[in-house]
Image (cartoon, rainbow, N blue to C red; front, side, top):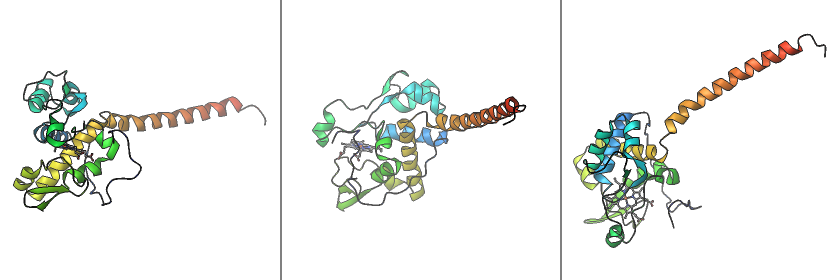
Length: 206
Ligand code: HEC
């Protein structure tokens, strides 16, 4: 199934873990961006994002974003693209690693969270995933998990999903912040128009 099409029936029948990420936590987003670079960008892109936009939103300078996320290989204006050449993923894994720009929008944060944490060892050295059974994506966080405490792993996977949530809709926080101001403005306008109406109709008997 092509990405971007939401299937009516989910391909999994397990309960998803709830992720508790916070889009206002810039430290978490910065850690998530760095983890994404180190653990995911070998195969995945977030093709609609440019480094300079990420820099602006995450509180980095352009130079910092390019340094952290591309080891100074990219220009600030470049899109955030995988280091893997086209076609290689299909050769290695039998499938193109999907672009992750919009995956939190398509599948939800909890899905991504449970998926990246959902690997289990079927037999010695052979991993499967409880969300996407038989997935061709390797258990890329195995090393991280082995060397981290449970809390550190929870934090790292939350940071990763936080970053992908941000990437899925970079203006979400702005939208939230604007929303209540618009409502407040409309309420104020309602009060004023009501008072105006009372003023106009004051002397008219009806
Ligand atoms: C070695 C290459 C590789 C790396 C590194 C990698 N992935 Fe993947 N990923 C894949 C491939 C291949 C698929 C397609 C899997 C499939 O459809 O079975 C995939 C699929 C996915 C999917 C879609 C799952 C679905 O339900 O369709 C998500 C989400 C994902 N990866 C997240 C990540 C994250 C987050 C990281 C970093 C922590 C990461 N990947 C690192 C190769 C990789």
